[in-house]
Amino acid sequence: MAKMTERMKELFEKVGAAALATSTPDGTPNVVPVGAKKIIDDETVLISDQFFNKTLANMKSNPQVSITYWEGHEGYQLKGKVTIETSGKRYEETARWIEDMGTRAGFPLKSKGVVILKIEEIYGVAPGPGAGKKLA
Image 1 (cartoon, one colour):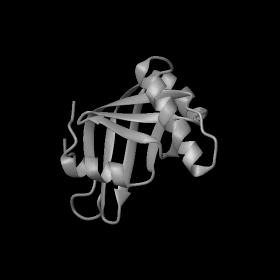
Image 2: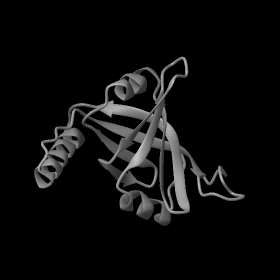
Image 3: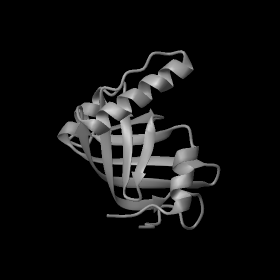
């Protein structure tokens, strides 16, 4: 497993949305923005599923994903495998968090599930000579 640094975690929490990439088993890509995301620990990210359709189908058939986030000239890509939870304590906590988020935004939100990404590799996506360099 690869571990995020404090700076990587700080930026992940700061950016409003990140790009989640999935693909079908035959390689057809799909990328969606995700805003309901949290860090569980240095090696694990949680993403709440409110609206996934193709994305959910892709993750069920091909659990390899990447999530990319950036601000200005700094950014990172996390790659790994996901699991999906639709019950249990972590799901229930996430469902409450998402419902509260929707209430504050004046837009009803409901979590359908929790996606848990175990980070296997981390890459830099900043422009310049180090673009695409494996960091962990």
